Amino acid sequence: MLSTYGLKILIALAIIVIGRWVAAAIRKAVRKALLKKKVDETVVNFSCSIAYVSLMAFIVVAALGQLGVQTSSIVAILGASALAIGLALQGSLSNLSAGVILMVTRPFKIGDYIEAGGDSVVVELISLLATTLKTVDNKKIIVPNSKLIGGSITNYTAEEIRRIDLTVGVSYDSNLKTVRDILMDEIVKDHRVLKDPAPFVGVVEMAESSVNLVVRPWVKT
Image (cartoon, rainbow, N blue to C red; front, side, top):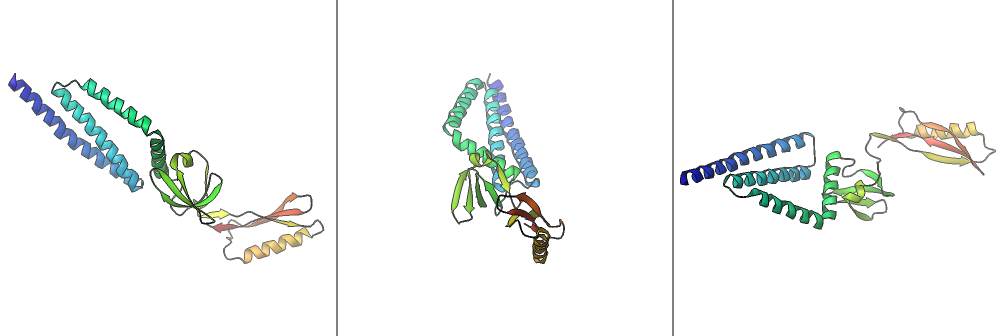
């Protein structure tokens, strides 16, 4: 009887020792894979911790089961506790998961000029729960990540070059060819305007009191 129980203790200890080694190896592999994909360091540490703790919980339950402990009740308690915590922190967990998605998918990075929720802003800080933005009139906005990721995001600095659209209205008695030539001359004189793609000037609208021309130069972001 004693020898049998002693054997169970040895097996339980072996499960914990080997399981801990396996969990550490998996944590290391997850970290290496995420860093290779250039995932944010905060997300890497968070993901590795979650993976390690989850694996160790499973290993401990397996070891206790080897000792004859009724693991079904332990699993039920852990599940109920996780559910209670999840319900209590529903909003925070939603922001947390959204923060992880933002850091993994990287729709924008710090310093990018974006449009989100109808505001044109510069990204100042990206954390797991919220993102700090600064408006063009120097106001700071802290947006929960779940709200930010739930809407559309326009990133103006994601590409190396971008097109600027300007509308110029002239009277109906103006010589449109002359106006177009003047606008084009002024555009090509600006060193910031790229030659390729070539700028464009043309009539876009016959408005009630003016003829509207669109000026479309390409510039570096």
